[in-house]
Each structure stands twice: as C-alpha cells, then as structure tokens.
Length: 127
Ligand SMILES: [Cu+2]
Image 1 (cartoon, rainbow, N blue to C red):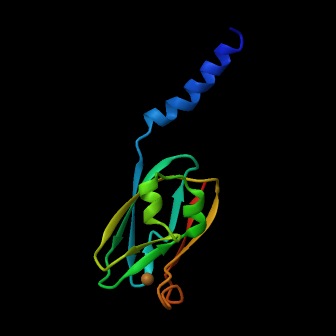
Image 2 (image 1 turned 90 degrees about the vertical axis):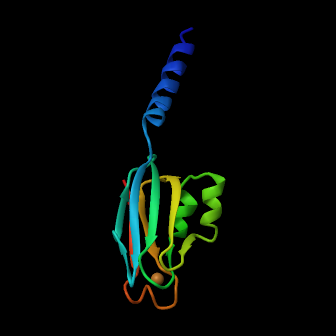
Image 3 (image 1 turned 60 degrees about the vertical axis):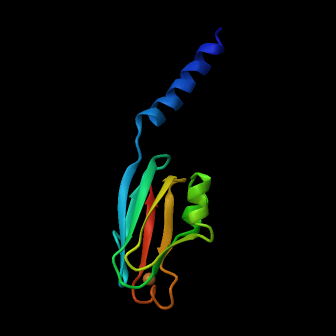
C-alpha cells in the first residue's frame, strides 16, 4: 500500500491540470509582410488553438519547422503542418491544435519568395 498511494497521488497531479484546461485560442494574422503578433508567447505543456488568418489578397505561409516538429498534436493537425509550415491562400483561415513543446525560442518565417526579406519573420517563445 505504501507504494500505491504515492502513485495514485502522482496520477492525480498529472491528470488534474489537463482536465481543467481548455485550450487557449491565439489569433495570428498574416499580412503583407508581417505576422501579428510577431512574437507568440506560449507556456510549455499548455494546450492551444492557433487561429491563423491571412488578411492579405495573396498567399502566405507560417513556416516553423522546429516548433511544429517539437510540439505535440494529433494526426489531423500534424498532417496540416507536414513540411513544417501551414499555407494560407488570400483570405483563408485555419485552426491548429497543439500542446506547446519544451521551453525555447523557435523561429518563424514566411517561405514565399522574398517575403522574409520584406520583414515577414517572427518567433515563438515557449516559457
Ligand atoms: Cu508571405
């Protein structure tokens, strides 16, 4: 019994925050030629819905391969970011559900020709 009780307590501690949390929704706008916000701050282990809005007429993408590789997400969301980016046509929106990975700073850029040169860069800071 002395071993069972600590294990049960540990499970409760792990389970309780997950059950209590609903994902935080963060809107990220893509425009000519910036991300808003350009720095996205997340907390390690927290669930999020990243809501992407391309407010421009032309296409943009949100390329963050290291971040997407490190974040945990379900298969349907993983499929959206295959290749390390989420691509949005002009006016398009998309939601991505994920859990923030290990603390660190992850680079973001738009991989369309010259867009990062025009300033379309950002970062994700996981605390
Ligand atoms: Cu772009």
